[in-house]
Length: 62
Image: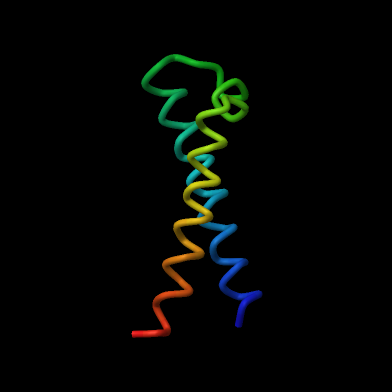
């Protein structure tokens, strides 16, 4: 069960990382690779992983 939750959380983080970089690429005119490696983009993706993991862990308790 934990591997499934961890896998889904990591997938959500990767998707969030790519989407945030894509938004920065389109709106700010930044290079896509520069947007991928920007520190705040990485921190937001890590926050998405942690938030997803906590959310998936709390879901079965209800």
